[in-house]
Image 1 (tube, rainbow, N blue to C red):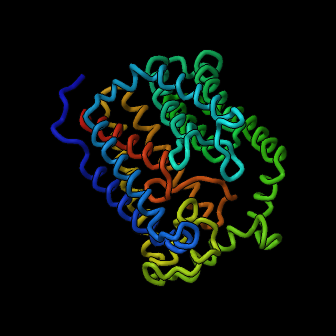
Image 2: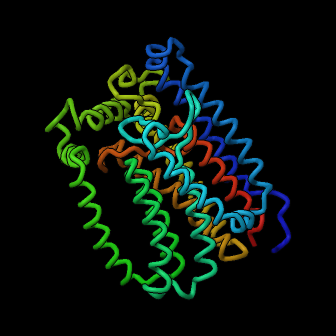
Amino acid sequence: MPKTRTAPDYVLMFTTLVLLVIGLIMVYSASAAWASYRFDDSFFFAKRQLFFASVGVLAMLFVIRVDYWTWRTWSKVIIIVCFILLVIVLIPGVGLVRGGARSWLGIGAFSIQPSEFMKMAMIAFLAKYLSENQKKIVSFKHGLMPSLSLVMVAFGMIMLQPDLGTGAVMVGTCVIMIFVAGARLSHFAWLGVAGLVGFVALIASAPYRIKRITSFLDPWSDPLGSGFQIIQSLYAIGPGGLMGMGLGESRQKYFYLPEPQTDFIFAILSEELGFIGGFIVLFLFGILLWRGIRIALGAPDLFGSFLAVGIISMVAIQVMINVGVVTGLMPVTGITLPLLSYGGSSLTLMLVSIGVLLNISRYVK
């Protein structure tokens, strides 16, 4: 291994912390009314977000000092543990059901979402596999299928919860990693057709997913049902205009947009801070993507490069899906906006992932 650099990528670190601070402010602003009504404490969600952000930042600072090759050494153990957790969460009475999905493990207020851990575990394991078998990836039988098989098993287990959003992010991230490794476009074309058929089957198998598609095409066909979230989200973004209504002045957070501190936090941000506020947030994510790509290109070995590609692809996919849903460009699915949305497992794991990326940056040529 090359000699460690004296410092990680400070641009990436600073951008991450700025987004985290914006997220803390917006979680409080978006959730104050709901938290005051439900818990008689307007800071309820903000305090919890601050706690998880603090834990995540400490974890990130720790991971920055851990040689990223450690993830290669322990990737098999980590992914086995994550598969065990995915099995446990499906056991009735053990897995916690929220929003119709059995996706959480925990007691009382403390809970984790195993599918979030699986995303990072799969990235690390696949980075190891691809770095050791890159020459085989051009072979459909000996390269592409073995790498995708484990991904699809994990996706199937996540869909049993069900959690299409998280599963889609994981699969999309892994597909990008495999493509970057050199898989043939013709193989992806056939897999794309098969994936499309499977995606249609998944939608057809659950009535609520069909409603999400129809509400995406015409939300006004069911304005008080499946189209409610999209309509209320657009009602938030529209009045924001160029400069916004002012921080804390959102109207849609007053029980119009369900739990606006999570998946639809970007709508509240756009309402209060306007187009300029939304643009600044997306610009910061653009910087995050740029620094991640730079780290991937400069990594001293294939494992580090694939690991960086996986992490930054995961962030980019989540941002695109979340913003696409909020602006009505994609059907509604439960994907948080990285570093901004309220969440424990998702926020902590995202900061740990960026910590791994920052560690790789210390070895960039």
